[in-house]
Image (cartoon, rainbow, N blue to C red; front, side, top):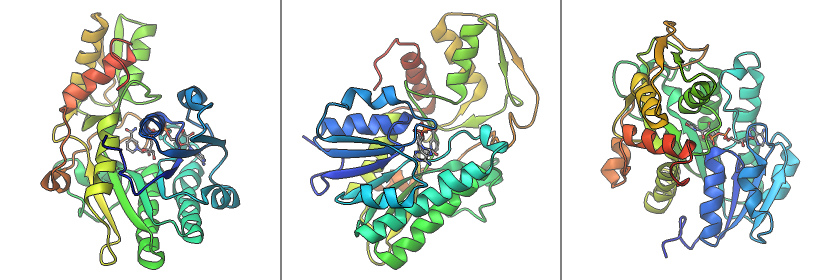
Length: 328
Ligand code: NAD
């Protein structure tokens, strides 16, 4: 059997493991025979996503805040790899509370790295975002070396700070960092995002769908299991070395989807025919990035591609949200 992270790793420390992507990682790692410790404060995650594993001796769930640096240091002891997903993902909410992005993105990442340094743990897989590109990726698809990075949300600022700390700890303290700037990750356990929002609003009112923003939004969507495989594949196939101890990879599909096409797929899969209205604002909310368009050539050149296009991924995710398809 091909185990997700190979055989050199046995014990994984997974932050944010009760969230959407993290809980799928838990399912997969436990199925592959790894020991997994999840630390999650359930600020956005859900206990029910990980509860099925509570009796499993290979699984430990710590409900705690990663802002608690001594807890992070102690609980990390004895692990082989850190998979760091915890972050504030409520971009709309953080407009009123920007400190959440400083704390839950930047400082939490620092705490995780400092605990790695003290515990002598080297590999970290980190969930960054295409949002770091800000306005750079509006007109043309960008590669990983695009810059200067001038974020338009405090969320993206927190992710850039995290990348910077990972890079510096890799140069100074032997950390090995795989950093992934995701497109939009979709699947059946989403707790936010455009697909989740459309389905919920159409359930409440099947007669009408209001599209926030100006209707021209377009992004790269890919399925959660492809996201997880892409990170694990990079860990196994792209070694970090003393010369290059950390690197950044755009992760997603080679295609993008317009928001109006998402609406069509949702409506079709729900079997309804609402009136579609467009709000007309340039940004759907402060910090919204209507177009995220990046190249994934760095990954494809090394041999990794997604199985599904952006449109196909959306259709699978919608069907999973509607219970028409199993979760992965
Ligand atoms: P999610 O909100 O479902 O998961 C994040 C988890 O982190 C949640 O369970 C939350 O409770 C936990 N958390 C937040 N702050 C914490 C803290 N201080 N201490 C302990 N736990 C804390 O989000 P997701 O969609 O699963 O995303 C996972 C990661 O991937 C995040 O870092 C996110 O920024 C990144 N990402 C996701 C997408 C996407 O489309 N889903 C796109 C780009 C990047």
